[in-house]
Image (tube, rainbow, N blue to C red):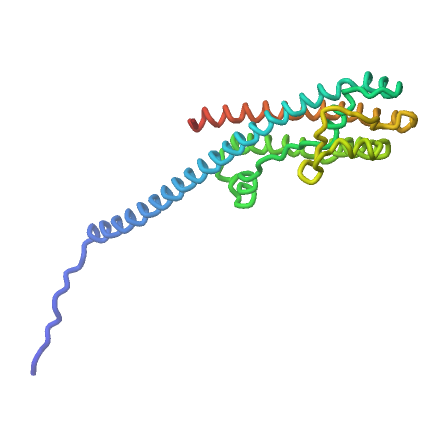
Length: 249
């Protein structure tokens, strides 16, 4: 009868078990840290992309703000002759300033923020990646810009509508239409002088209403320019802040 002998299996010592456990533990731990490091690096890159994008938005906004400040300054200068123009029209004269006033009160030129990055940060939950100071800075600028845009959508636009409506009630069609040589291609008056009386000077009530609206419009334009300047100063400071912190060129 054959007798089968089981092979002798050498048992591992506690030290060997401990070394195997330690190796597995270290492998898992290193993998965990490597993954965290990868995510942290990806978050940092994403953060820098957000800040770079917002910085570019600020540059675009600043250029637009500077243009509008200059635009409104010229408009204020053009409208700052209302009293003398009013007096001349009452005397049935045709002052040169009348056409200048009309041209500079036909439409508004509002500011619109470049909200590309803010929308991305909001929709993608990107604010959680930013440092508190950076997030607060971006939100503060957005809030200020929203305030200016709200002003433009209310009193700024309303005052322009009031001027336009009063002008339409007062203006003489024949005289006004003669200012345009090609209304299809040029929607603004292209004449350099008025040859016919545009406003009915005999209707003093309507004339008074029109110039009162113009005066209110002038006040609103001044306030709008001041708002543009405040936002421009804020944008300039933020550009300097992010440029120094993230070493943008």
